[in-house]
View 1 (cartoon, rainbow, N blue to C red):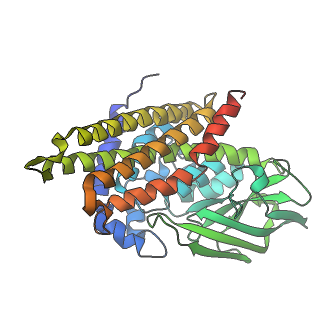
View 2 (cartoon, rainbow, N blue to C red):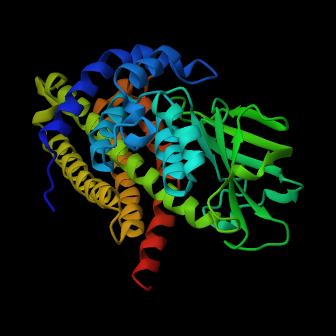
Length: 379
């Protein structure tokens, strides 16, 4: 495997960076943070309609570009660098992947073209207040109801769930236990009985929501994949979302490094730049090593996802664990290198630190993923 990006992928990166320097400037990020929606609809329209980012990995037969997961990687790095406020990870990393992996032909034809065009925003509602990352954590239930199903329960920490047009809900059949009995359902965000609310969190650049299901009735064709076998599909979807998130973390960590190096060159103490002091040099060197190692882990996982290769689960967890640690370390060191100004609201360092802490726990924290890798090793 060649650990380098193609010229087309590098051009995608350059184009994305030019766009995000304006569309996701610090001023625009702070503006989006103040809204309940959490993103700017005009920016979303630009990235989906003009740049076709939402169509990138959608198969061509559903109006997408049919590009690989490795092509998505440099775009996710740039999104991370710019702290883009948009329902991109939830829609493409979760919603689109779930449909591509488990949807029927009719379901794909109904929903994927809308996602590719940016007209449909999707979210995966799998987590609950117990904060478990396994099938046991699914407590919402479903039951047969004539020619359809009725869903009951409460989902929590749903990424962009309060603005999603399409919810993919994990629920279990009554009296089932563990992974057996969990199914996924396609539920319109505005369906009768669906109550959604934004959950304010530490990371103001990304939105989480609660979703209450009050006797929500959906038809038979809303079932995604096989009934009772939805957790396996949910895990496969989450692994691909974890890989996309790992790439995003790499880009954000690299931005922390660049901010730190630039500041170390211009900030003086005792008549010399602080970057000339050994302690600052070593901090920056350690950050560089972590960024490059994290990029390798994420690149490998993205390449496996592009090939749908063996070992994807282990690669996804390895990338998510290492990239989470690398991003958090770099964000924390950025604040230290900047000193007093790094702790202020006016400086962007705290935005990266909060994103680092939030993404550390999103889709499972590093401890969860290390246990998962250990299990894959037979330990």
